[in-house]
Structure formats: C-alpha cells, structure tokens
Length: 292
Image (cartoon, rainbow, N blue to C red; front, side):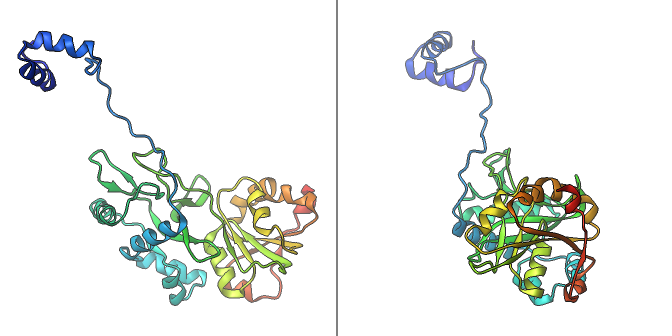
C-alpha cells in the first residue's frame, strides 16, 4: 500500500498509522473512493440582467473589428458606413489565441457566468467559439443589447443566422429567442415582420416603419405579445431573396397560420435589395389565401 494517493499518505502521517489502516479509516468515513469520478460542471447559470449584458457586450464588441468582406456585404445590402458603426457589427475572430485573450480580459472585469456565448474551457479560462460570420447586436426597445446574433458566411441547416450561445458548455449560458421591436406605439396600425435582424434594421433605417424582427421562433406568440394593446391591423412579412425559398414554408406554416384566424390583414412581400424599399409597392406573394 506504499503507492496509494497522497491524501492517504498524508492522513497516515498525521494519524501516525500505516497507510493500510489509513486507507480503511478513510473508506469508513466515506471521504475517499477508489472509483473517483471527474467533476462535471453543468450550464445552470441564470441569465444576467439586460443592463449588465449590454455593458459587457459593448465592451466585448469594442475589442473586435469588422473585416472588409463583412463590411462590403453590409454596404451591398444598403447600410451606410455610419449605421454599420452605430449598430456595432463586428466579425467573429478566427484566431483561437485572440478569443482566449479577449475572454480572459473580460473575465478580469466582469463575472461572465450568465452571459450567453461565453464559457470556460478545461483550464477554467473564459472563452468563446469560432463561428465564421459577424455579430449582429439585437437591441430591445430601450436600446440595450439583449443578445448577439451571428450572420453566417455560409448558411447552415437552411439558416443564415444563429444565436451567440454557450449551452451545454462548462459554465455556459443559453441564449433566448429575443425579438427586436422598433417604432411600435399604441396608435400603430401597420407593422413589418421579418425573421432576419439585418433586414429588420434596414426597414427601420430606410422607411422608419414599425418593425418586429426575430429568428428561430416557432409560433406567433412572441409576435402577438409585442403588438398586444395596439391598433395594428395590417401585418406584412418581408423576405429577402434568395432566402425566400428557404423560409417561406416555415413562415406560412409556423407563424402566419397562427395569425390567420385572428382577423389581421396579412401579406408576404420580398425584396432583392434596399432599392426596393423606395418603390411604392413591393411584389406580393399571394400565397396565404391558398393556405387559409
């Protein structure tokens, strides 16, 4: 028994007994096991308040840059350079060391437990994963950053966007399906919906219309919650080509089908680029009537 663990040897030395007797006493006290299991840390963090999330995310985004390819993509969509900077779009760093340095720097200033997207690696250093694309901050009606969406360089599983989340990671936190709401008041009678935050920001900036943007919701409950107590009667879903074919079936079957019995005037319209916003009428896909 001379090769037993250090805890047994230390206990034997303190008790002035041999290691065999020490081993038996420790087993009897149930404070030692020959079948030790690794400690497992579960992601059980409570989501940080939005004011704290906003503060940390803004600090985080200030450490990043927007790569030229992503800036050009935003410009081609119709965003002005001033709005690109104002909205804090930033590229996800590809360098692993940089991501660790950023996580370590933030963890010295803030408690990152409860912040979606960040988690600890096996050495307990705070970190965030690489996903090829750029961050799109999702603001609430008060201007706080609720969470971060990532616009992907290449679509994955028929989606071009995903949440910056860290569920199922050590000390990770899951993102929620936040909604961006803009310019909706009690007197509003019309609203534009889109399942793309970038398109939502374009609608907001170009035509300044009441807008709701979201991603990954599976029914109309979240939308109805945002327009509760208003006079909204007309709901128009705006899609951007080429995403139309990917998303149309999902929109009709999961979102608009729930709204049809409620008496709203519903349209689906799509755009090719920002210039279509300046047309008097968008092209209308008269497909909802076929599903009613």
